[in-house]
Image (cartoon, rainbow, N blue to C red):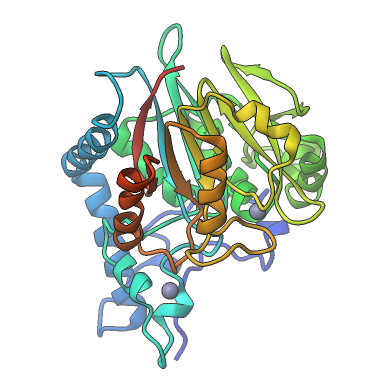
Amino acid sequence: MAVFLGTARCAPSMTRLAPCGRRFRISDPAVSLCRRGSSPFRLLSRASLSEFSSLLHSRASYVASRDAAAEDAGGRGHDGESDSEIIFMGTGTSEGIPRVSCLTNPLKKCPVCLKAVVPGSKNRRLNTSILIRYPGPTRKCNILIDAGKFFYQSALRWFPAYGIRTIDAVIITHSHADAIGGLDDLRDWTNNVQPHIPIYVAKRDFEVMKKTHYYLVDTSGIIPGAAVSELQFNIMQEEPFVVNDLQITPLPVWHGQGYRSLGFRFGKVCYISDVSEIPEETYPLLRDCDILIVDALRPDRSTSTHFGLPRALEEVRKIQPKRTLFTGMMHLMDHEAVNEGLKKLLETEGIDVQLSYDGLRIPITL
Ligand SMILES: [Zn+2]
Ligand SMILES: [Zn+2]
């Protein structure tokens, strides 16, 4: 038996997919639903369509959960309404949580991935990314940090729910697939919402993009009429720069030996999503930090490329932010259980640390 998992494109490789301008229609024979029996595809399609339908038609419930999330965030140390905010578009690892391999493992049940299957679970995590929203002269500005492999799913979930339409810029931390894999998906914005999107990227990562997204960097080879993302690439140095009136300060860190990644500071918020070591020269940039968002991959130990929770807590004690939210959690991090343990540190050490989750909104002052 053949199971169709998706057949909207015919080309075998990504390199041939991108310039192809064919639109995906639900009426396409290749994606129409089987009308008889209960094939896995039919069940999968039903589940997907049911979730999609709830996304489109139950905005009220998302608005309610949005307000609850904002209230959850806003009630902790913030004075009243803030015009600026961060939205966590994703807080998980590259493969996403739940892991498919955990759900198909016949020998071992993974408690966190099983919990993460349930829609609305705070253990359900997509690629690490945040959106910064702040008032511009005529409307809210939206600056995205990273657009990884699951950017489309994140945007599908949170853009309609939070009434977000434009993307004023994308700032790139580094060039791993979970940070840049969604650049192609920006075509929906540049085709249908706005003419182009500025991308801010370090030179070394731009060199990678010339290979991974060559058709977006050099659009001269695109067949006329075919649609790709219209991106304007801006090379950033490791020094402050301004995007739409917002000053951004790069926070250079190591993400594995000899591999540079950038965190970013805006106002008194510091965001470091992928880090194994903070160089001494970066610590002064982290002083007087109200909100620190930092990598904490697993509960027990660090890896060669990421902080684990014990190391992340050591850094929190050193940096002394007013509040810390961890991100980039793998499936060994159970949201409720880990947060319960972290809550105790507020009483014992006076440090305010919690795990973030997809869709969380934090009011900020810029
Ligand atoms: Zn798992
Ligand atoms: Zn990475």
